[in-house]
Image (cartoon, rainbow, N blue to C red; front, top):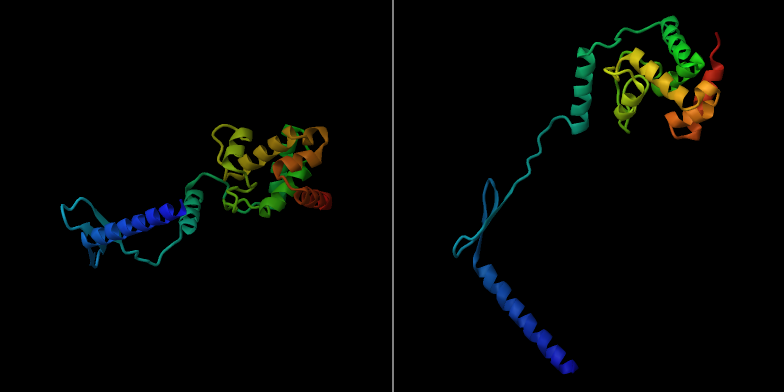
Length: 199
């Protein structure tokens, strides 16, 4: 039985070797300046071209995306001037009053998320954007219809809405912050910033 298996394997190997040699004889190979061309001599049934890869200096895809975002920020109707602390706090207090939460919580989130940015619309590695670092899908849920994610006022009010609905309006700040960013370290950091705010 084993002898028959060995003989069969031997003949299969011979047939494959002959077939491979025969096929190789039917192909031509051409190295061109455009790339590599492989074609069957008899009948030209198919042709395969592999173009050379040319590396050109320029911007990466991430750099291009950031440039597009910056262009959109410069041309969009958002708050672009640097606001004073009093002006920022007026926004925090207005949003806090509307949604029934402590305005210092909003200020602390803004501080941790973007250093109280109001003039840029930077994106994080995770795709969060704007002064309050929202994912676009989350922003659409909590913002007023037609709001701009890069607009400081819109972002602050959307953040206040999210925090209120996640528990801050009933005093559960921990749950609200954990909903904003699923990290206990984040919750502790924002609370410590909030407690440090003196009025």
